[in-house]
Length: 370
Ligand SMILES: NC(=O)c1ccc[n+]([C@@H]2O[C@H](COP(=O)([O-])OP(=O)(O)OC[C@H]3O[C@@H](n4cnc5c(N)ncnc54)[C@H](O)[C@@H]3O)[C@@H](O)[C@H]2O)c1
Image 1 (spheres, rainbow, N blue to C red):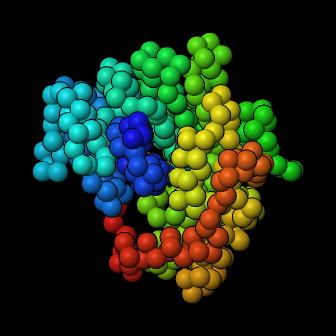
Image 2 (cartoon, rainbow, N blue to C red):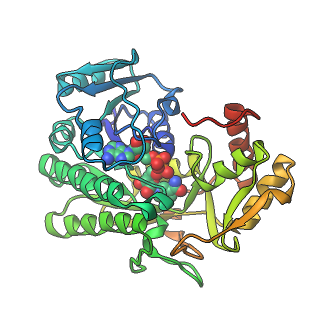
């Protein structure tokens, strides 16, 4: 019997793929997710899931509104029939672990330190994905990124340290963006951190805290740095879903600058298998890069998707570049191969699945945000 797993941010894009992969491997999963605009309960619809909101701690929405920290609406889950408001979260976790459910979703920010401490005794380890993730939003205003990435990460890792000490495993999902742009060759795991936008800086702050906890307390942390992921369930503000959505609606597709920024693309399910492989077989205190060999210029990616959808290149619309836009990310990913992991989804297959997902979701109807 595997020890239960706590996965933060499990209602988001990569989080939900990770939860599914964990359940497939026989884990009972507790999710903590703040239910921001990027979360969607539908992402876990293939699993037997219960959603609950801790009554006394449902302060997240209130804080966001009162302090005006958030420009976008938080959909309140309270009062809708699918969500239960509960008093005794540990009691509910115990009941969940005796039930035949796959996942227990607790709607809360990971900033709730008391909540995070109360959960750590029930799980063997943590996979931390909760974050604000859209670079453009971080350029507009970085406060939410500092709260989610820095305060939220500290709350989670410190709760883990205080309850579990040096036992169990803590996996931090970081990003290739912490290394800054890599113009030549490929960056290995010991490349210096040189973040160049506020999102990347917030993620790099997580890594600095993680290394300080490894050094100071011996906390058993492992870090993974995935490259750019795509696939079903990603919020439509991101590049690949935006290309597909605009193409479905025959709208211009905005491409920053000259469109010659280079990115390496990986299908979401392959990120999830990498995360679980590293969680299960990776060495603690190590960093693992997660990537593929599918490196493309952004404008090539747009052309590829338009070609697959039978849409004209005239939809490509070059717009003013975003400030500080990194030209290239490129990871050396030999180390994770030693764990036996390989990406399984060729770019074209992954893109086809992604196009089909958004076509089924939005079809040719005008897009309406949830
Ligand atoms: N998508 C990518 O290409 C990519 C690449 C490398 C690394 N990553 C990392 O993977 C992780 C997941 O990325 P994603 O693309 O799935 O993001 P996403 O934006 O789709 O999902 C993030 C999830 O975290 C939740 N969340 C945000 N703040 C929270 C908080 N304070 N407390 C609890 N939950 C909170 C949101 O509600 C959402 O469900 C992030 O840490 C990101 O930095 C993503």
